[in-house]
Length: 238
Image (cartoon, rainbow, N blue to C red; front, side):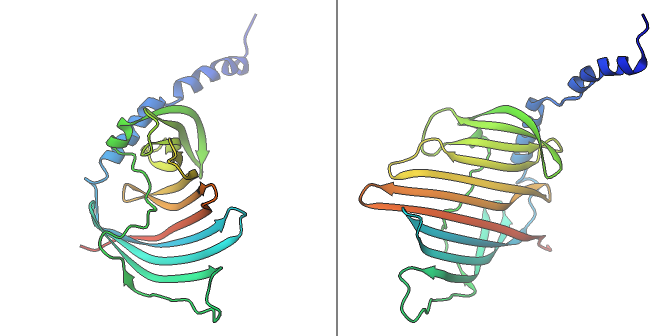
């Protein structure tokens, strides 16, 4: 019996595809090397940010809505400066009857001031406390990507669980979706999602969404939504 060339190709194709499939472990190692080397490749840069915040009560009634715009400048891996260009109270349930709201322009943030909207770093310290397990191959913005599930070694408040996606190309960080591994008293829920892009061989976030629900029976019940957008990345001329 003769086997035609089409049948031979059909029989061999699955084997070729399996052999061509990249090893998730190798990709993960490449991604970690990229993360650990980001400071060695550091070049001063700046970008614009916009933070939109909504605060609702337990019945989903809007209480406050705020908007902040500004510029962040990174002078070194450990030195950044935030300049607030605009702060605006979009809505306040308890606004004064004349509707006047304070506006501040060009205000630099005070040293040590923190808005609490920090993304967890996937650095060596983080990796030592978490396990990365390959789940599946997928496509994000036209890029072939590996989906890894993150689980903490121990359920502690400073640890996280969720998902992270790395591009097959150069091990680039594309996105993450995390929540606390253990919620402290009063924190009913929290979820952080972010998307990244390659900028000078560094993976910088372009979007970040955070949902937080705080609930202590009889005392407080708040739902907080924060949307952060980052744009106009540029290297500083040295």
